[in-house]
Length: 189
Image (tube, rainbow, N blue to C red):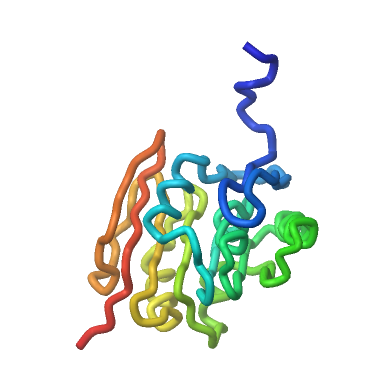
């Protein structure tokens, strides 16, 4: 077995699809940061489709940037990656420039505050906060008006929160300590 093969925190994650496939992202250490594993990202993008051309994407708890950068690598029109740790955001910005992903915008902000002040709507939203984070109800209240009809919302947590009825279950999975679901936004008729 190669030395270091099972290192717990290498602070690097690999893009698994699209134009940046195989490229690695460095990320800063931060409390609660746990990048979504390759196998989970592969499953997620099989559910979403490999080509996100024309889609607007929000990665609200950016962390390593793996989810947002995967979306950009797969031709998303616009990707906003927000995180409340400004050091993390600086690393995300550096990575997007190194990968040549000009459609990526990085924002240093609390997720709920960012949504509250936002006018833009999104087609795909990634919600993967630290496991200890618990402000789901406030997040969903702010999120509802920021989604285009039929938008996909990916939720990853240790234990999934109560999810509003307007986010219909589409797919679900489990990996290690993470439970994840892909939901679809349904406009009330």
